[in-house]
Length: 117
Image 1 (tube, rainbow, N blue to C red):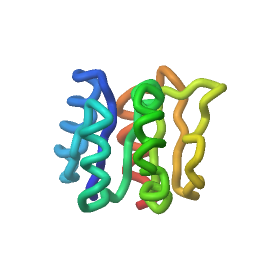
Image 2: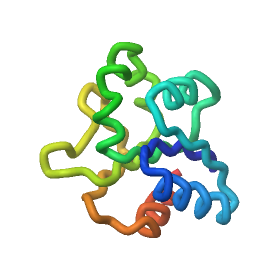
Image 3: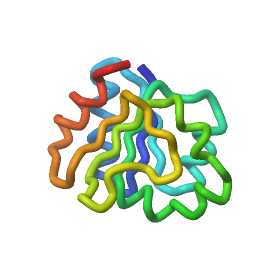
Image 4: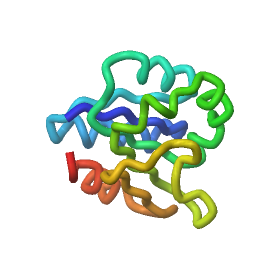
């Protein structure tokens, strides 16, 4: 399975990518908006893991480049969400999307990410 991980915290991003790779998945990691835009312009992943605060930092750039339609058919695991941000505004939800609250453990994120593909 091919994953795309968007997270600006180096340690969390590395732990997620390493754990996925140990389970024989591929994981492309993105730190900044430009990395993410470039990644979705290429071959699309099977699933995307997005840290909510990182997404919100690049939201205006993603809207400007109109990448949300490209993401509609890809399940997204959106983690570290708050009650006020429980989805990606402007994107039609996918039935396999998963919204995970703040404070969830990384191994739980990985376990949930491996489901439903």
